[in-house]
Length: 342
Image (cartoon, rainbow, N blue to C red; front, side, top):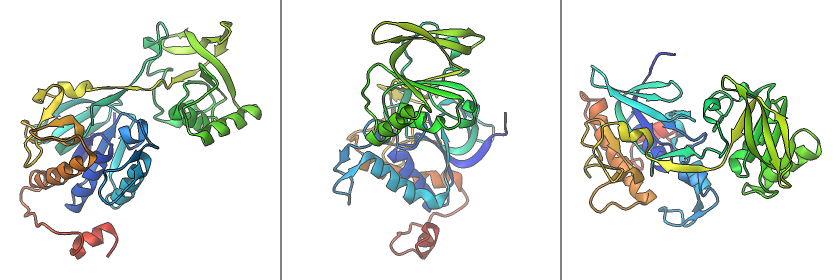
């Protein structure tokens, strides 16, 4: 295991609120690392409604979820935030020096003065396919996200699903896999049409296979797959050789390990004060839909406000011997230099 990463702030959740928190922290010269179980930034916006229009973002009469996330990523680029995608925050402990150590299920350890929970409604947990005996293979040859593409180079890969994740990884892994097969229970998809068209072109060129089928059984030993049983729409079954199986059956939302962080929760929400957005545990803050306080509105714009006040409070923890001077981006040459617009 590598040495722990040290930073000012670790943010759990890379949705719009977590991303904007990077901006507010960056204006104060605070560096941030973000941890998210998804394989890309955006949280609910990009996973659940990337093309759905949003009408209540100030200054943007209409913007899709994906467009909003893209603009936020552009906005925070000057601050060099580090992202840990495909990882779930699994543990949190206070160190002897007062800082926090956050661990992920991938073995990453991040030490920071401040922890910010921006996990929306909680962690997005992949839906496990209804295949008997799948548990021993999980993490070895059954994967719910792609952390390192190289792990699939020269392998027989099976992908199941009909959404954007299934199609995206079909297209991305096809050039490096020994063989790639996509299965879906019907010959129709919920993914972007251009992705579906690209997939069908690869099938026509015999570079990948596509079957209207479902996975009924797994075969292997020691957590490593050798083959699966596929069943077609006509109920015919056959064996298919597989090294890795990637089921993309959607996500459920759970609070997950955050519930074990020792926070004072009310109906699975973190209670915070409205001056700092700090929980009852000093150094742990909450912003966005994961928190509750009198008058709380579950709106993106409300989360932006919460992120701004959180950053001001976090500065005093991270830089206890420095004075915080409030500045406006419109008039501060110092802030404009940080943003690369001076």
